[in-house]
Structures are given as C-alpha cells and as structure tokens.
Length: 193
Image (cartoon, rainbow, N blue to C red):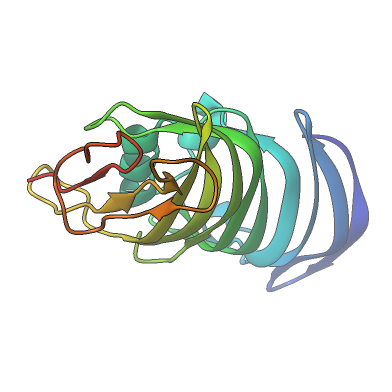
C-alpha cells in the first residue's frame, strides 16, 4: 500500500479511518472503516478499489468459496471492486460487487475462452456469486448470467453462450436446457456433475 492518506482517529476502544485514499499496486482506492480494540482481525468498513488486478495477492485475501469460483473461471485482467468488508477468522469477507471491463474468463470444466468481458459479479458473504456478464467468444457475443454456488465437483453449473444463429445477424440462437453444442456451433449450454 502506498500514497495513503485520510483521517485517522485513535480512541481507547480502537481506530477509525475516514476518507482513506490509497494505492494498492496499480489499483487506486478509498475506504472508511474501523478496528475495534486495535485488532486488525476486527476490520470492518466499506470502500472501492479501481483497477484491481486478478493477481495472486488478491486471491490469497478471498474466502474459500470465492477462491473456488476464481479457480473455476481463471479470470485475467482487472476489475473495479466496491463493497463492504469485514474479517472473519482472519479472512476477509466481502459483500459487494466486481465490475469487469475487458477481462477474460475460461471455465475449467469446459475450457472456452471468453474475452472482452464486461458486466457485474455480485459477491455474497456466504460465498455465492451472481453474474450478469457479456463478452466475446471468437466472433460471437457471449452472455453469462445466473448464480454460482457450491462449486464442488458434484455441483450443477449452467452457463449459456448466445450468438447469431445460422444465417447471420438477427437470428438469435439460445439453448439453456441442452448439454450439447448445437449444430450451428453457436450455443453452448451444459451441466457439470
């Protein structure tokens, strides 16, 4: 952390931070929060980080379920992160959202690279992630939406890839129920068990 500045208030009961502005590697951020009893494990507050890279240092700060989501989708690039944070058993718990612009994702059970990803992923405290994302898979548009939870090997995961159907622009092709690649090779819909 560099270039940090803001209002720091120290009392017998702990520390409060107000209007903290900081740089965290290439990311720039702001934060308001407090430590109870001067214990870092009690940190609570809200803020944002703009341009936060998908880097190992960020991965290590995530809870187990959010790490599993990261592992399954292999994000690259950066994100803007906004939300509320608190520490639970020495680990950051985030209730907020990641706003992606130009990121890349690749689901590990069906390695299909989605580029130029834009949209929002809501990170819930229990570890679930709700997504509303759009991107490009080759020349076709890709839409990823839904809620990801309990990503264990036996979990059912449904993703949808939409693109122009046979005959070009304007003929939308979608299929959310199939576990196959349709004959036009424009829609991928699958479940992993």
